[in-house]
Amino acid sequence: MAQLAEFQRWRRFRQALPRSEREPFEEMLDEARFHTSASSMAVRTSVFEGVFMAVLFRHYQELEALRAAGERAG
Image 1 (cartoon, rainbow, N blue to C red):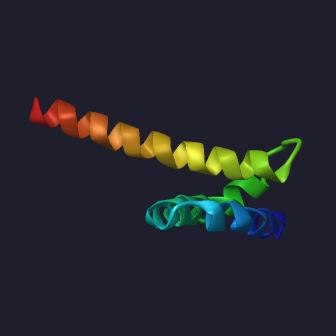
Image 2: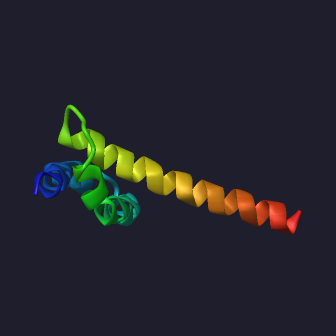
């Protein structure tokens, strides 16, 4: 799969991160992997765009959950 190859290309970037930041980076990529089937169906100019959209979408979901929790609490 092209997306999996894209994730492999980021391996050196991950290795260059401070140890404390590697796990959050890997978690972010794991979230993107969850949406690879959807991103593979999208029309785009590069594989990275699909990976980026998957990460962006997951962050959007998290922000919406936090917003909803804040509204319920407030």
